[in-house]
Length: 320
Length: 279
Image (cartoon, rainbow over all chains, first blue to last red):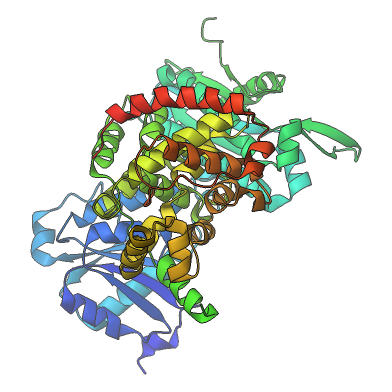
């Protein structure tokens, strides 16, 4: 037994290998016994993508030179989705290719292996990548969207650069009563749904700098250029209102309200959930600090919340 | 038929990986995905024309990866939640085979027609989730396609039997396999975690009176299947007009006069979609 085998992986790791290189495949398959590492092999990129989207592996190894598409395209397709982001990806590349292509800025790979490589090197690299990926990073554990540290960092960065932006805080009305009545796992479903709606609506604005973060619970944040934000709010509200009824039981949905206990423990009726969005605009370097932005947002949010239906409020104080 | 053999065939059928899809729809969807001005509504309309893409999109959005299995039954909602990136992934990975067109002539038209008829009925009787019914109508014969791909020999046998004895496709399936495409639909719906409303519409379209949770959806698809056959639009694999379950009409509170109104509406809509050729 080699020393490396002394540190064991917690369970069998499923590895997808996308490569037409049979030598690489054979080496990999022989590295660990089947109980530690299960290698599932695909010759081509296209066939693998659908399997990948439906059944996530623990690690993805992609050959830079796939027969049917560029390896990096496969990686970027997978990594551009928040639900697949946590999947660690290793790119297998030849030394010659590495020398000729030096643009790594846009490549969302977690590590490289140079092929051909020795089994020992391969083994160490793979082991490290898998364990590194399991360590916590600043992402909401539920939605996998960036969490507080990244959010604050991003906002402060934009403030410091005096960049114009619209910062929106979104949260759900009557989420707590839904959670209380149906239980937290159904509450989580609603949060996942909300995250998807926000992410896809914001992504729909192509060619602009944007950002979506998950503060926690039912609080989300997104950033867009000021001229795009109102349309984004409208779309989010519209999509949220049409989808959220499907998360209620049939009879509650038909009634249009639920019965649950309020904070004082009294039985009360609550409307179906709605989304409230407060938008702070930073134009012409008005804001100096992240804290100002969040303070303005909280005041606006109270205004948005006065409306029991889904609504958004834009920061109007610019005109003054 | 022994239970073992049934189980074995169920496994074979559920091993399905690549369902065929229609190349033209695929091109058009790819074009819309690339166009930043296109809306999810436009895209949903197009995807709803193709039972394979529809099934894939619903399967994906209802998979545990997204965290709300079994909740989403509308294509439009599915697209909002999946986003264009995933849709692009679905399209890139969908291998373009026209097995359905080669092997089951007319089934695509029959399916689109049934979706149209079922949703028209659902709207007429005032059901809330018209789109669920439409999807169930579109997918109501998916079991035939899946069986044809996974068990091609059986499919040949079924077709021969339909021709030789002038049977319905369903009866021939039952005679040869021990179960029909309605049962296959139920397996697929469970396997893909489709919402119960779609599952019941798909799997009880021949016996809507047995649907427990969403009998109205099943009745609409049942009647839709009947009507599209009356119009002889496309083909469900045999030339028979189905037995119309009287309970279905009763359940939907439809009178003969209502049926006439619906048939009139449909004849106009059929003319419209007849111009749309994707093949």
